[in-house]
Length: 380
Image (cartoon, rainbow, N blue to C red; front, side):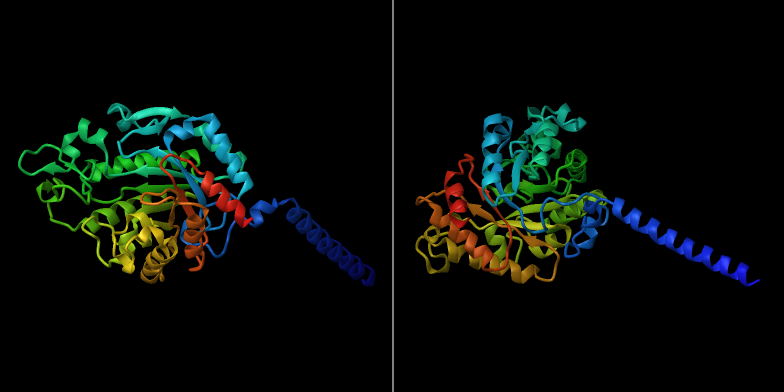
């Protein structure tokens, strides 16, 4: 009997050792990228379904903006890749759809092909593969609502002149009816195509109603219940969030700098308290050149980049502080009334960083970033 008991105990010990050994071997075979794929500081509802290791930490996007034409240029892309390699930059904001309504990549979305909006200047799969190989975070800029091509092909979807019923020219172009859910669906088709291609972030621009022109003559045909413009902007973002909730993609939106300061929608539907819950980041444009003389007591606000940018961002942070939405400001990388040098670039960046903001985006419409390059290298 004692021998049988001893034999049983030995079998039990060997079984336990074998079990522990198998656990160790299994753990050793799991890729480290899977173990550390999630950042607990990032909002849970965004990354619940993300099985990929992320390129950057949340809120640290540091990008330059490229037009569709720049993306189509092999030489320009390589220059920007080199700039990212040599500096703290980690991202590119690139045009997927411009405010003319033109789509710059080889989109397969039926609606946009039917109305002639697609001009494939670059191959989206190729450029995303290049960025992935270099660990560059990709931000696809989609202009919504300001859209000359849709309104030309489908004037019934446009903001219209209340006297003639024709599309109305406002704020430098033609605009679709922001209340029209059919328009929302078409834009979301484009979003989902880019998400499926592997874009890291979708950034909406012109996500608003027009702000200038003969606004009193404008009518929104789909707004039959006389809803506020904030309802349309927030409603669209809510639909985007619902469509993308199971995908590892971030959603951001560009807003006027002054929208951060004034606690109303400025008549264009941009109310940051309403937008923030459906966004991963808000991207204000606090360009000092765009503030009127007398702002903050400055006769030329453009000459005071630190003060203007910091004041604007402080106002916005105070209003959305209880959300999980980051603020990633656009940095003015151009001059209007004065030349902007490395000094002005660095002062804007310092204004953001002094407030604990970890990312920024550089805007230069001509995509000339030599001044930005010198500014960034001076920090290295």
